[in-house]
Each structure stands twice: as structure tokens, then as C-alpha cells.
Amino acid sequence: MKKTVLTITTIVVASLGFAQKAKVVSAYNYNKAFERSLKCSELVDGLAAINEAINDAEAQTWAKTWYYRGNLYFNVLASKTSKESCVSLDADALEKCTDSYMKAMVLNFQDPELKKLDLEKDEDVMKFMMAIKEAFEGKIKVDDETYNMDIISRKIPGLSGEYGNKGIGQFQNKDYKGAQESFGKSLMLGQFTGKMDTMMMYNTALASELAGDNATAKQVYEGLIMLKYNVDGNGPNLYMSLSKIYKKEGDTAKADEIVKKGRKAYPNDYNLIVTELDGYLASGKHQEALTNLDLAITNNPKNEVLYFARGTVYENLKNEDKAVADYKKAIEIKPDYYDAHFNLGAYFFNKGAEKINEANALPYNETKKFEAMKLEAKKLFETSIPSIEKANELNPKDVDTANMLIKVYTQTEQYDKAKAIKAKYQ
View 1 (cartoon, rainbow, N blue to C red):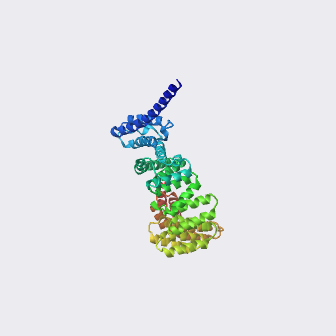
View 2: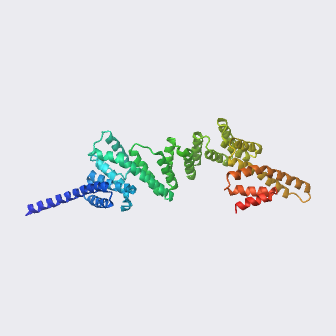
View 3: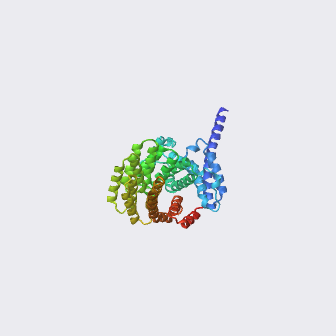
């Protein structure tokens, strides 16, 4: 009797094993049926079968179980371009697909120790990446080479793109932490194909910074600087962002050092020039600012930004003739340079306003001096008009420029023009 019971138990256990194996095979068949018919019902049945199989202690140790599961979820994602989209079957299809393929590749190793890798641990992820590379080189044996080949060459590029798109959506919705995670996964998956996606690195750095993860942001920005990343002209922004993080952390010396490195790499970038100048001016290092700009202009005498920047330094130093000369030189090089027109106009406008204030402060008995100063002020306002008009023409949306133009027209008794400009902004 005891032997009979043991025999029955053995048969039952064996039957359960066969049942789970059958579920895995069924899942495979349902997936193939979907690829022929593109009917979501096939995926529903396939997912039901495979998700039952992964609960079995034995079936969950088979690479093919996870590989078939990954294929089913991959087709859920890929179906969005089909007539009958199946993406609503599972909102977490992307994560489940990725997780399944990763587990399939881990369990595909013949080495028992590699089969134990836990991809939740950073050190194991590094071991995994190295093992996959060595498997492709034939240094490490796997049970089925076609699994790794299919996952890495065909499936992972698509998953990487999906995570990238997900991250963009999260970023646009200001879910910066979610975007950081999605961009990071896209970047990690891309590395399986030997591709270093620097644009995704930049997205990861930006999302990390906005999410407040300064450590990650700094690490990725520094990596991009080493790679000399400058897609869409964002190279200078790497230094700006990195400097800003260090400044926020209170390390102003490091922040200044980063800006200096940025200036060396991108000597003509306006934002870096202005940032460096702000640092010099804030610390009263006006001569350093001028020395820096003089050298830059010697190296690049046709760069209007450099003359404009030096003009602002001269204006701060009250060396007004040189400031005006530099603003005019910037405009000579670039006639539609809004900032130079604005500053030149603002300079003469402010000088006129100063004369008006001086005149108004005179004693009542100094009538002649008062009238003379008013006349000087009017001439200064008239001198400012062409520059302010040009600035308004170049940037009609700027309210500050428009208001300055209204005031200068009023001061020069051109009331109709002042009224016309005022009407545009009401």
C-alpha cells in the first residue's frame, strides 16, 4: 500500500511538471498564432498560460519560460502599429517584457553561479553585462545562443526606444524622477548592442538634475564632457549645468573651475562668457574680466558676442566711451544683434534720464542751467532713439524695450509715436 501511495504521488508530481511544461509550450503556440492572425485574444490566452507557468518552481528556472513570456509582452507593445492594438492588455507590458528577457538571459547561462545573478544589485548588473559580452565571444557557454541573439539584436533596440519615448512623455509632464528612470533604462539597454547613446545620456543627466539627484547628474554630465558631447549645440550647457549644481551645493570654487573649463572648450559661447563675467564682477575682478575678453577678441576678432560682453564690463567700470565703441562694433559685425542695440539705446537713455534728474535737483533760481541741462538730456534721448527703435523691431514682444521707446518718444515730444507704440501693447 505504501509503495502504491508513493507511486501515485510520483505520478501526480510528474503530471504537474508536464502540465507546466505544456503551459509553456501553449504560450509559445499562442504567440505564434498571434503573429499570424494579429488577434489580441491569442495574446490574452498566451499570457494567461505563461503567467501561470512562472508560478511553478521548476518552470520558473527555465530560460525558455521567460523568453516566451518576453516575446508575448513584446508583441503587446509592437501591436500598437497594427489594426487591432493590444497595448491595453497590460499597462506594465514594457517593464514585464524587459524583466522577462533579462531573466531569460541570466538563466540561459550554463554556469550555476551566473544563473544566480540578481539584477537588482549594481555589482551583479556589471557582472551580467560582462558575461553577456563574453558569451557572444564564445568564452562563456549558454544553453541556447538563439535566445541571446534574438533578444539583443532584435528586441532590445525596440525596448530601448520604448523607454526613451516613455521618458520624454514623463519629462514633458514634469515627472522628472520617472523620466530619469526611463531614460536610464533606455541607456542601459542600448549598451547591450554596443551603442553609447549620448543623447539619451544627456536626457538622463537633465532629468536627474531636475529630479534633484545631483550625484547622478554630475556623474553623467562629466561623462558627456569627456565624450565631447555637443548635439544640437548643447555642449556648453553641460558646463553650465554642472557648474550650477556645484554652486547650489555651495562649492563655488568648483563651480568656477567648471566654467573656466567650459570657456576653454567653447571660447565663444555667450552664456559661458556671461557666467564667467558675472563671477568676476561679483568678486570685483574687473581686470580679470577684461583680460579674459581681450584675449578672446584677439583670437576671434569677428565675434560680436565678445565685443558686446566687453562693452558691458566697460559700462560697469564707467569707461563709457569704450563701452559705446564695443556696442557699436558688435552691431557693425552683426547688424541685427538685439542685445547690442538694446544696451546702446539704454546707455544713452539712462544718460538722458540722469541729466533730467540733475536738472530737477537744481535750485529754482538757476533757470538757464536748468534749460541747458534739459536740452542736453533731449539730445541724449534723441541719440538713443535709433538703437531703441531697432531693438523694438528685432524683438517686438519685449515689453521693456517698448516701454523705453514710449518714454523716449515722450521726452522728445513725439507724442503721436508714443501713443502708437502704447496702443500696440494695451
